[in-house]
Image 1 (spheres, helix red, strand yellow):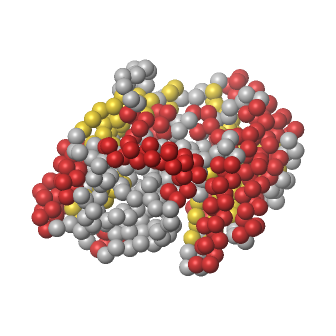
Image 2 (cartoon, rainbow, N blue to C red):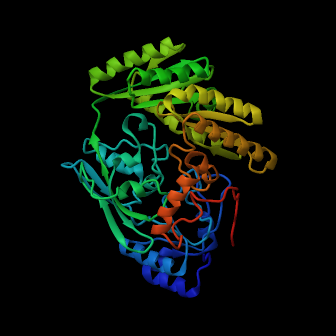
Image 3 (cartoon, one colour):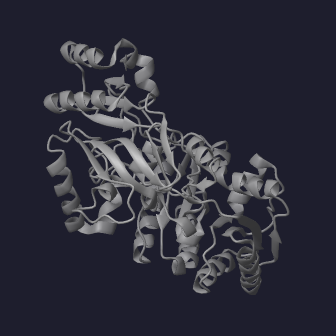
Length: 473
């Protein structure tokens, strides 16, 4: 695997994309040597920004011939070291692929390039009275291409699903340089393997998405937001299980523990309660009569499960401030310690209470500071550790704590990641979920499409031991 670019290859790349779209300066390489994942860093050989799919195809052909790694990258907001150029090679930027190509109101679809910012697209379709539900917390800066590569979720995932549930068609450049089109503006399509879903969540290891057609739904007519307060974690977790058992599916059902509440309130200053052990942020949308009836039922369930207070937001401004505060949890925590490690583990909804208790027990066992919040309605929790990467002894305890958390999640019928992806961060734990046979099946797909292993190598199938802070010159 080549990690350096020869003069001949450099000239060929510049000929393809132009001098202004090729950068191998130390500053640029440093900027793209890491993403939002703590403790992972590796220098690429160059940063290249193609202007169209034909240039992407030619770059891929060149790199495939010379065994040069390619790391497709959006805004670098992922939390699994998925866009860290661990093996060197080329970071492929999509700053020129930033157009919303079509909003099709007849077929309820939007077609975009991968560099479009998620929130920009959401606002564009909402202006047409349409709705794109996936809403990752990073949506103000994350790109659609990154969302597709990581199969991003969000606060509305409980009711509406995640990114893969809205991807109808893709244009993909394969590792060979060939361009394929999968899916279409279709409600039904069983013509062969579902290649569209294969590429969603593949973390850029199978091909490069250059265009996507996404499903839209009608904008909900009405919505209400509620905050339920609890003096103990188990009561809050039990409320989640009981809400689902009563066949009510809220748009949003978020959980924050006391440690998270204190940090977020100090940061957002919107009047969040900090004298309770946990809160549930609950939102429902739909026809007004249905929403109002659901909220009455939700309030009753929370009160039955020992909620000390249940309050409905009196205005959209108040509701939006609550949602914004929840989305700012990571930013709020990142202010407190040099290193903030935000993980995700998912369990069946019925096991939420057990998982929350286990996380706290594991944190005590290893004497580390873990705040827990997340999408409780779909079982996806975010245990987040505030630490300092310079404290090697503490970092070892942090890693052991997270290993125990992942093991416990799988024991409860869950998985090691619900939305962050595997990348490098979770690769040592993938066997816990899939076993050797499952990993071998995935590697067989990778090998058949990418025999030279140029597409985002060392992701998903990394070695069992983590390689921390590797910087190549």
